[in-house]
Image (tube, rainbow over the protein chains, first blue to last red):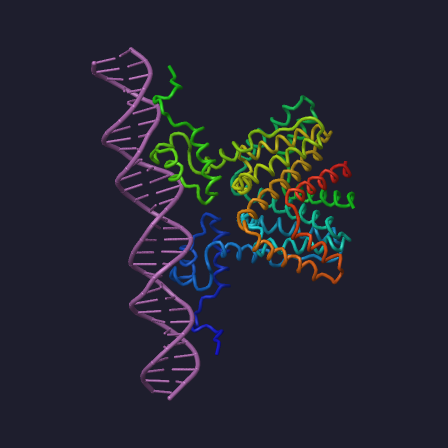
Length: 214
Length: 214
DNA sequence: GACACGTTTGGACCGGCGGTCCAATACTCG
DNA sequence: CGAGTATTGGACCGCCGGTCCAAACGTGTC
């Protein structure tokens, strides 16, 4: 007879371990996640968790999938793509470590979740064949790229000082191309932009490109 | 008097260290890069390199910037954007570790190089103000996202077996949406696609989106 | 009710990592 | 040629992920 139930009342479980992992990542960031911290948080020994999780990579992938679990979108396909993309962006804003994790492995559950959601919306848009896989690839890669950049930006420059210095330098690079005041203006805009709005503008550029190629 | 020359004939230099780093990364991948490996490759002790490089992160950033150093594009702006994007893609194909590195920190020199190049082309396309920074952000994020996914895909599934299994599963997800044979076809296409061509198709979707919004 | 047996636990242990430190070295300049 | 300094390289530190196994624990049996 196969026994599925635990043999202890205070049993560890994969779910409890993943929840603890998410808490630690949120509190201490990716560098703060150590298996020692996880086991300490669970008040157990380090050998115990290897009965439930293969290694640290699997733990990270499971945590990322947990954070993105609730995402979905119905109704108008364009709106549903926007909603999905914003859902990912906001989740990463709350849990910046997810941004880096999504770039780490294209074959992990969380990334597959994104592909599936975007693929379904594109299908409802009427795309098939190469057009659908090209459009899906473009959108998924844009979303994942923007997510990773936004997340690591937030991690690297939580204070605005370094961020402003960098954007000033970039603005100078751009302005150097010529002396057009308009060029300087667009460079200066980089300093003031709202990441979330800019992210959505990017989604709209891709949606417009998909429509015009169709 | 300020002494700029080295005091030894066989002097270590930042350039020699970065070159050794690139060689090790190409040969052994990101996990194979240890400061111990670098110093062994240079036949020196581990303390020596800290006079030339602050830490491992700086070494990685310098290595990535070295690989992307030669990129540029003149002439027709659209062609120059395609050439720049393909140049990045091909560089990452040769040096997969660059893909992950670019996602790690938006403020590193290599990423700024990409921003500058794309910004210049968009300027020649006649974009200014918000349109230019939105378009730049979208394109940079797409390129970096695709680069990271392509690179880690190559790293995770160098044999085709796991890759095909994953794409089959994704195809099943997509096909599940309905029983349309066309839907199945587009899912099946995922299995056979050429990453490089699909990457370029994404750039073209973006360029079409820019034109139609303009 | 007790006992035997498979499952789960947790802490000791391992090799290897990034980074620091400082005596010894190898050079340049006066 | 000697003084003084920039550079070197190996010992050392604390910490990491992962392995291992004796002890603790529940369950099912008799």
